Image (cartoon, rainbow, N blue to C red; front, side, top):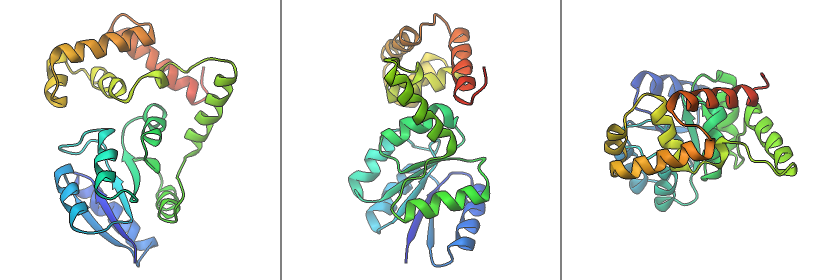
Length: 216
């Protein structure tokens, strides 16, 4: 019997996803967690085949959560379940070791497909990400790099916070790092993306997203 750990801080979302899983995989046991600390405790107490992981959970550590989970159970499958832009974050999470990335606004059919695929030992990659991988291959052949994919995981995380309107001080508190460190990352982001302020950064990201989804 397969066991799934569903990590999501919104009880209504947890209930809905759990009901869907139990509907198409009635033999699967679904255990719930609402925080990252609770997740780690459960991983230390029993075996799981799959962790369905929301990125924005209390105590979460973004990309570092994948490593923390695998330090406890190195063979567990991890399916990211997120409301963050798939076009911007999915490839980064897959490269960080996740077995798939599933947007929260996905259809029930796609949810079933993703979970079934990962539980069977595969990797779930949506059509959006498949297109990105093809485009990236073509770009590499042309010796070009896509602008946002040259950012490190930490830079991407801080960029996301900047785009939501957070100040340097707020980001430092959330990530438990110094304000000067945040400022350094911010400067690197601006330099890599060739922007000088948050407005330009926002516009650059929107242009990139439109290009990835096939709109000019």
